[in-house]
Length: 65
Image (cartoon, rainbow, N blue to C red):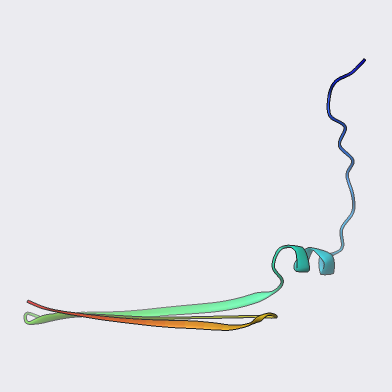
């Protein structure tokens, strides 16, 4: 008797794969860093859009020397 596991392969369409893997999405990000003798400034932004909605975020950080 063979105790090895049996695996069956199955075909899956692109549309089904999109829903399984999270769907289609597009995103973008950007950042800025300015350094001066008196202070540092960092800023960032990110946005992601998908079939489930839109998500975005920003961050800003300033450091005085």
